[in-house]
Image 1: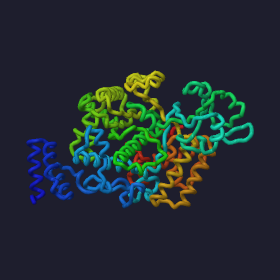
Image 2: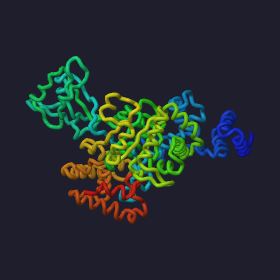
Image 3: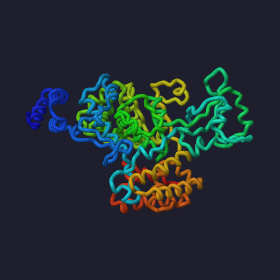
Image 4: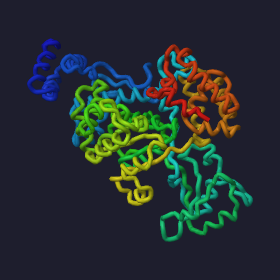
Length: 540
């Protein structure tokens, strides 16, 4: 059999004559006689394509299955002998993908999932990340909702709704604890009751009634309509399903970047056929598989300044982001995905782009959004999500994307972008986040179950018993910091100003000294953040 080095040399010569794709086509045909390991080595020698060498591990480095965070992808891009990413390949290419095309997809998706899944939260003690594993995003992520938008939760005759969702035999009815926003995650938390007039399916919004306080029988008697709805908050992921182009705004630390990270990871998992690894209680948004590409808008703004504001520059930035996962040439993959609507662009941090541009360094914020908006118009099948701080996305930016509050929602016009704002954590979300956080520390061997239970009780008791601390915990990043302070100190200051002082002292003042140079941004799972971004969170 021809030596691997000789075969690789011939392929490199073919590249000079036919180009990479022509050489790959010949290699795909000829290499069927090679053992898989030899095929991977030749590909690496000829194309510099180390993405086809060896196995890829998603999640933990130890053995196990996906339900515990580990997935082994073989050198043939199969999982347990099954070819994966075929469905996404069909969406992207409009046909069954070739084996090389499918492998390239699998390498990208698996490496992206591995990158996004692990949160490098080392806390305030070296042992928290002594194995280099970080925390599992899939285990600690808490579903997020948007402000001022609701979804139907339950529907039926008023008597049935009262029986199923309320307690109380006397004149006062109270929402059952299992459905109360103070206890349940938003997807299971009722917060309004709305009447539906006879002869229509449209709720009568004039009969809205909040459910967080006890309701008297005479209140219910106003519902003369034959049917009523219970409503719940709308999940962000549901809005992603509904709108092709979407802007998610929020206050600092509200979870915008974490949502994009989780969305990218979950898209990758689904495309790899790993639905069993996803939490069954998480409603899913996108209607079909798509190729997630996560890109910092600050990075894109720099590229636009250097290479010119054009669709071609954005294409090149996305292509390089794909190629950065060592999957070989990615131009055809990206072109096909954009053309057929198989790509979902996750563009993070518009507010991190300067308001004023600098020639050759960065474009300004408005022009960067204009470039993205134009790219989405050119590639009318592509899905785009942009994140930005609420205050930074003012009327100029809303006008640019054609956002009209009521008109857009009434028309469902896909040419318009939708803009939402993340809502603060409810008590139900806080009650879910805290135990999930400490369970993950138990799973990684940093705490035993009794220690975790004690910390969980201490944090919830201290926070929920003090409205000012509870207000802090409604910001996910501040709640994360509170869990870290408690983990390190064993107690949480009961006064908000003292908690601020402790966070500032420990996280901003002494961090680098205590952590041997580890950045605070890594410790809170936001590797591109610095103290200037974190400090506004801690200002009274």
